Amino acid sequence: MKKINAILLLIVGIFLFTSCSDDDTIGEARKMTLTEITNTPDYFWFSYEYEQYKLDTAWLKNIIAVQKPDEYKFVVYTEPSCLCGTDYTYFPKFIKLLDSAGIMEDNYEIYLMSDTNNLQPYSQLYKVEALPSIILLHNGQFIYSVTDSMKAHSTTLEEEIIRSFYAVN
Image 1: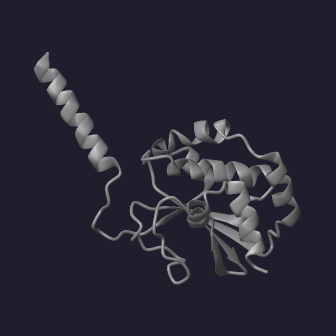
Image 2: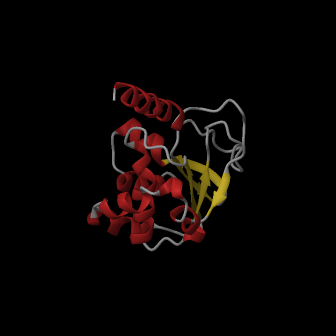
């Protein structure tokens, strides 16, 4: 019995230390649709986090009022199957906000990355420092990092989406 427990402990330890580790090889970020993401076993947790998120309806009304889909595009960088910390929940919460605000999938892109050093199409505009990362482009130019600002200001996704829209002015 002790041998079985030791083996199980070893397997769990290996999983924990390798599931969220950085890879030294530089791969490419992979663009995916929301449908592809939700049908990927690595994102088994996405639907649960999406459904559990309670929107701040006052902020949501402001987002709906100020959005300009023809000018703005959000870019989401996310890591598959990494449940490290609580930051991973930003991605499904953010998508729920966009869905609730009527922001269509044409106005955001999702990139799967195994490491912050993966090659990605906006690397000339923005250096991904952490996963997940959510940025806003205005007419194709980087103007705001939603996730960096959330961490710096201890604010919510809703507040930072509004801030990001006003960062243009």
